[in-house]
Every structure is written in structure tokens, then in C-alpha cells.
Amino acid sequence: ILNVEQSPQSLHVQEGDSTNFTCSFPSSNFYALHWYRWETAKSPEALFVMTLNGDEKKKGRISATLNTKEGYSYLYIKGSQPEDSATYLCASDNYGQNFVFGPGTRLSVLP
Amino acid sequence: DTAVSQTPKYLVTQMGNDKSIKCEQNLGHDTMYWYKQDSKKFLKIMFSYNNKELIINETVPNRFSPKSPDKAHLNLHINSLELGDSAVYFCASSRQGENYGYTFGSGTRLTVV
Image (cartoon, rainbow over all chains, first blue to last red; front, side, top):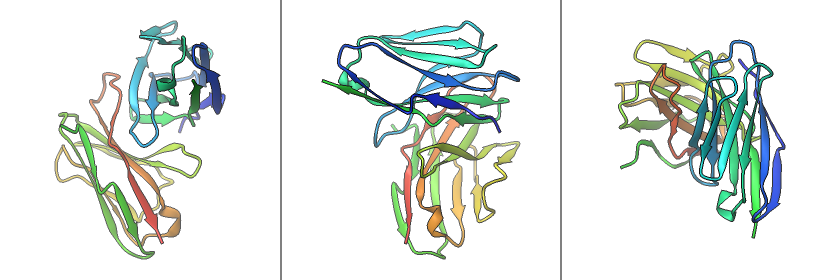
């Protein structure tokens, strides 16, 4: 079973600030890397799936990059808004069988 | 139209009881999963299942068993419930093999007293 780590564990930013956090995963036998957004009392929602080294994905103010050789992915949020407050999960695809999730980064955006 | 639905949303039961949590998906996905959100809020895989193969996380006690009457359902049965089974359980589904993300259910909060 893979080990997926995320940092920081939690983050507080002011509205309008840009921020980023990290997901690290084993680079050997890489299959795919997924990012999810998880609001309290809801279920995780898919943001991105990334497969190729150097991949960059963007959705509105949120973007992500992938480095499969060194085993990390960054998630960036530009101009954070209070509605961005959530836990952001990354998951590494376990040889195409299931996802191994990181512990998440809990983001709080203060108005 | 809920894509992945779990019932019940909350379940409070006594130690030693046997209970089931139901999961249904209407997305036509061919693989379903059960995850447990542990005390540190990690999502840990318990089972993944398609119509060909059941993959079990070996750390899951054999009191837990998945039952799939058809492709759209994957229910979770738990025998002889213990206090430590208290957690939130999430069902998810995906289309296999094409790097699709998961669609999650809304979770079932199980409390064993």
C-alpha cells in the first residue's frame, strides 16, 4: 500500500491571498494523482486527475502541477475566497486498483 | 438525482450487534469502494469491487464484509460491532481503467455504544 503525505496539515489565509500546498507520493510505479475538495458535512468532490510528468491543470482560480519523477504535486489557489475553505485531499492511484488518500490540508480563508 | 447514495446517514447501535450500510450508484460505474474515515480523518480503503474481483485491504477485520447483489450496489455488513468501529464510512464508485475520479456518497456516521 502506498504512503501519501500532504503538507501543511492546516492553513489559515486572508481573503484575497494566494496559497499553495503539497502532496508527495512514491514516484515508483506511478499511475495517476487525483485532487479532491472536501467541504465539511459533504462528500469529497473531484478537482483534477493528473497522469503525466509536468502536467498542469486549471479550474478557475485553482491549478495543480505534477512531478512524477520526484513524487510531488502542488495545488495553488489564487485570490482565496471564503468559499474555498475546505479540506483538499490528494490521492495516488494504487496500481489502478484503488486510491490511497493523503491526510488532507485543511484550508480556512478568513474574510 | 443522487449519483452515489448511502443509507442510513446516521446509525447508532450497541456493541455486539450486526448492521448493514447500503450503497447504490446510478452512474453506470463498474467499480465500487468502501472507505473508512479514521479518527485522524484519513480516508482508508476497505474494499474495492467490480463484477470480476473483490480486493480487500488485509487490515480490515473479517467482521466486515461487502455484498454486491448487482453492479449498482455494494453494501457493507458488519458483524459483532465493536466500539472501535465508530467512524464515518464512505462509499464511492468509478469507471475502471481510464483514470476517472471517484464519485463519493455522503457518508454514514456509525456510532457504536
